[in-house]
Length: 212
Ligand code: DX5
Ligand code: ZN
Image (cartoon, rainbow, N blue to C red; front, side, top):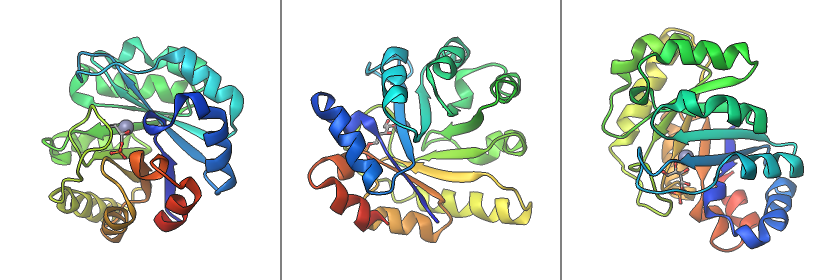
């Protein structure tokens, strides 16, 4: 079954409790939270206080996406705040394996996030260590962008490599995911779909059902 992870970047902050209840009653068990530092991406959004507050309101798995430089600065605070999966962009740290080991030692899952311009082959050695590969299907930083169709080849190649090696990691896609692009991604091997503006723009339940 494909995992659907609503991205809270697109939620209405003033209706957050209601919207989290709504996605949960539509069967959602994973929420995606983007942490932006204004350096790796030009944007700033929420921090660990917000993650902690979301944690207090839901039992869903919290999928933390660090869009930051020096992710090692944020990992512990995100785990302390209640993060379950910590995704980081591997080019932002000098010692990705040490960071992966640290997150695992704290009992949490790890994902590596790949910018559209980066090949998974560059990070092939990391794939033996992670629980998830987060394939960015837009340039990171903002919600509401258009899906980059060339990423379908990349998802397909990662899935082929995964099946050849009988690896168990999830392939999560993030950016511009709606009912059409989501189906294209799952066809080539995506196992988890992050979706922000498509889910929160109008009828939440209807959007989640059409993604399913
Ligand atoms: C983009 C973020 C995404 C974003 C997706 O940098 O990583 O998680 O919230 O939003 P949509 O689904 O609107 O493209
Ligand atoms: Zn994200």
